[in-house]
Image 1 (tube, helix red, strand yellow):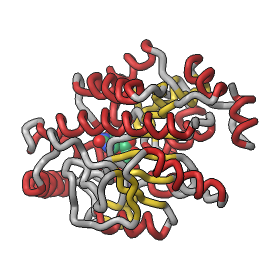
Image 2 (tube, helix red, strand yellow):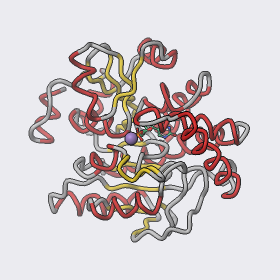
Image 3 (cartoon, protein in one colour):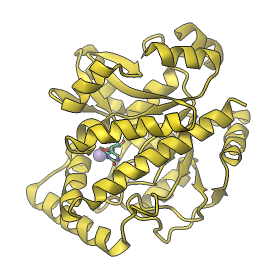
Length: 311
Ligand code: PSU
Ligand code: MN
């Protein structure tokens, strides 16, 4: 597989272990959707994380694509977990959160690591995948502009299509959008002219590009690739109407979560998982339904894009 990936992508690591069915799909040019694992091991509670894994994979499969979860498995950067490995990550005993800066350490220490968007992009791209789906990307934290997720910088140097529901509601969305502009990341609204708010369908923040079909997205991505651009094409899709939350509910929940985090002195990598947990409590689980619904829909759209990319 590594040789195949190298042939198609130039210099590519031989270090990533790729699950057999994923490797043969990539080698044959069949559609693959890479998925993250931090949302499973840190972002969502047990047992909802199992639903999340199943629904993300089902979403990609519904479109005719092969899902592949990224992680560091006992020190091995991996694209495509087998069912035993997935069980270990869902149980999350001894599974650490791995962002881009943590990848090499987790590998050297032979650790189990659940990968954030940033780390997942590193692994998926190295293995030759072109499309990735997640719930919400990281971004600039509110009131702490120096705490900017590594997701943004990896998006700026990983030429994949990335599908999400915007940046997580706990973040400073205008600042995140400005940073994406500075980094040259094209943000494309899927059937929307506004940045979705992860839990909410709208934010009032206008974005500069819109696409209404997977083929339109592929055309934009191919133009970027033709020019040799290094950035991802970041596709933002509103959460499904049936599970999206009203703005005021989310605003109140986030305000409460930020207050709690400040009172407890939560900082650094723990911030995102903490805030997501606090919002979950404050919305009495409604944010969980939204999260699961959008994870599935994003994987489904990513699958459609992956299929269109193979034509
Ligand atoms: N979205 C969720 N739950 C999550 C995350 C995103 O609904 O757990 C994770 C993603 O893996 C994302 C990470 O890459 O949070 C960002 O963390 P940080 O802000 O520390 O970069
Ligand atoms: Mn951070």
